[in-house]
Image (cartoon, rainbow, N blue to C red):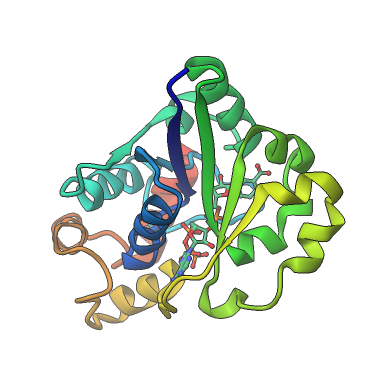
Length: 213
Ligand SMILES: Nc1ncnc2c1ncn2[C@@H]1O[C@H](COP(=O)(O)OP(=O)(O)OP(=O)(O)O)[C@@H](O)[C@H]1O
Ligand SMILES: O=C(O)c1ccc[n+]([C@@H]2O[C@H](COP(=O)([O-])O)[C@@H](O)[C@H]2O)c1
């Protein structure tokens, strides 16, 4: 049986930035992934999302990943609607691709810290290898979390990556204030944000988001 290693980069991507792209590429290289599927969430559980519509987040993700032949984007969570639970996405992919696919869900270590608040965390660890890329505010040890899952803890893989002090929150703040985001997001995404006036007026776009989601 030929094995395919599929990376899944889940996120709100509001907007997508070089931190996301960098950890996806590092995971691809380190774990010899055949491809990385970017899956923008429709509704991120436990998160208040404003500033861009779900469609805009998907469009920006497509623009950001277009120049990497190993990256593709899936709108599966957009089409599924409702809360974008990772366990549902992993179940769907497992059913679609079968046992010859090994799934690697790529995330920052802050995500691993929050894992017990996710829907069916043990099931997630049965369905995939959970990659935890060390990020600026999440560089603390995750060993205790790994240990707390017992045998399943071996499905959490630590991935040290270059520290990039970038977050979507900070980018939204900068755009609102008219500050430069050059070298933090791909030029095509910056151009999209500028042309569509995304994040420039929080109140207007928040209204759009809450209508659509
Ligand atoms: N600079 C970064 N370095 C490493 N991982 C990151 C970085 N930014 C985000 N991630 C990881 O990418 C995944 C998706 O992140 P998300 O789309 O929520 O971006 P974010 O920058 O954390 O957003 P926000 O500031 O709006 O919370 C998460 O698992 C997160 O931990
Ligand atoms: O499944 C869950 O319960 C769950 C809870 C929080 C976040 N997630 C997923 O984790 C990914 C990163 O989320 P976030 O909040 O860092 O944008 C994104 O794909 C979310 O759908 C999933």
